[in-house]
Structures are given as C-alpha cells and as structure tokens.
Image (cartoon, rainbow, N blue to C red):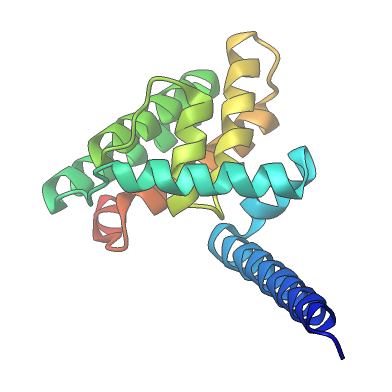
Length: 184
C-alpha cells in the first residue's frame, strides 16, 4: 500500500478518536452538571436548550467560585431563626406583610452569607449553584411576592410563598439548624 494511503488511514483514525473523545467529554460534562444542579439543570435546558443551558450553568459555577460565600456564625443563625419564627407568626394576622418580611429576611441572609443581592435574577442564578433543589421554590415565592405587591395574591398563594421561602431560608441558615429548633 502506498504511503499516502497509510497517512489517510491514520488521519481518519485520529479524527474518529478525537470525535469519540469530544463526545465522551460532552457527555461527562452533561452528567456532571446534571448531578450538580439537579432540577435546575432540567429547568435551564428546557428553557434554553442543552448547549446554551450548559454554558449558562458553567458560567454560574465560575461566578460562584469568585464569591466569598461563608456560613453564618451561631449567634447570627439564632437571630435569623428567631426572626423567621416571628415572621411566620405574623402570617396569621397579616399574610401580605409576612410574605414581604420573608422576602426581605431571605435576602438579608443571602447578603450575610456573601451572595450579591442587587438583582433577583442574578441572586437566583448565584444561589442555584449551592442550593439547586430549592432555587425553584425561591423563584415561585418571588413571583407570588410580586403578585402580592400588586394586590393579586390570594391567601393560599401567600401561604405557598411562605412555604417556598422557608425551604430556601432553612438551606441558607446552613447545616446546623439548631437556631431554627431553638427558636421554635
């Protein structure tokens, strides 16, 4: 066989191997992102397609790595847990006000943990890296809170908002939820 034929065969083999490696790398990336982001991965892929979603999730992860996210100290955790208990108690008599307070309280905890809090979309994207299971609850609560501000939320909507805010709030307090137990 002539030398040029061997060269073509080798080039073809190299291209096939490169395509297989590239495909395997993309599959591993997808698997890693799906494992890391859970339901947030599925939501993002559904909203914008796989390629764009994966680029977005990678960008979120890189941005998150630049942030100094820290746990709350025990005294701060306890103070927030007590504030949450008071906010929940207020819901009985003043549901709209309690939801507003819950929104503010969650934002304050995020700020104290080190998350930037200027913009809701960026806040939810940042928090999705560390709290992918509850970020959708946060979005739902925020949407209800906006409807509440317009006077368009029912009491049941407001109750749901409190449940959603509580899910993220408890995650944000950290692994040691002693403060929540003591506040109760």
